[in-house]
Amino acid sequence: MKINDDLERDILSTLFKHGCIGKHHTPIINLCKNLNQYSCKEIKKGITSLRKKQLINIYKTYHGIDVRIVPSKLKEIKIIIEKEY
Image (cartoon, rainbow, N blue to C red):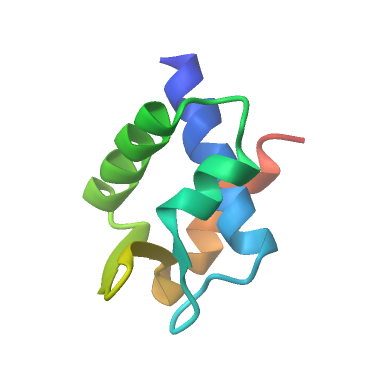
């Protein structure tokens, strides 16, 4: 599933680039806007698979669901992002 791996890598790199680590979080809608080459439905599936791998957390807010990177998994995430280049 190369497309799924590319999608997960793009999600992680976008969250890392915007500094969504620990207490800082971003709505899923912003990810859909930043990653416009994928549909929002695909992005949500990628987020659920990353959550199962325990690389990101889902954070409920009054305006919807936000996502953020788990700080303890930062080394693994950097390795995954660097595989892209």
